[in-house]
Image (cartoon, rainbow over all chains, first blue to last red; front, side, top):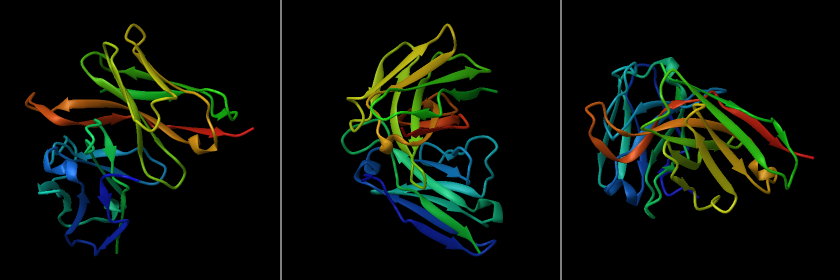
Length: 108
Length: 126
């Protein structure tokens, strides 16, 4: 089982705003990263260090964190944003890498 | 632009050893950590471990007894060995560059995978 917990599925209407969350005790101390994975493709980094966006990632993607919860927000979701999203950070035991179970985003 | 490519057998027999190599092109292998991550069919991502370019390794506790990750800087490659495989090791295996620094050069307290290979499917079956 993952020490980072994500909702299995979330949906959003085209053009609306959606927040995908990741919960875990380690997030009180460590920043979260977010990855987008489309079917048959490798994951792509969309947010790192809580709220940093790599070059080439649209600015509709943003990240934040409060307490034990990290969030990925997509403002004005597009059809091409339909994908699985994974959070990652350290785990609460000090291991350097843990992944959340993933959230399947459906754009209606 | 750095690119990663996984290579190795697509089929491994139960109880045998899975061996994969990741070739790094477009940039030096130095100054980074290099991870292996896997994804069983229809499931989420699982971190296997990483190696620093100079050799030190850290492994997932759940796989530590069976995993070895090594690096060959002269070839720009790093490798994964997973022993005593079972059907549960069937997965897409990804290699990824693992970074601890933000764009200003400040060190973060958690790493992130900023470049991924396309992945290679490994099936464990007799």
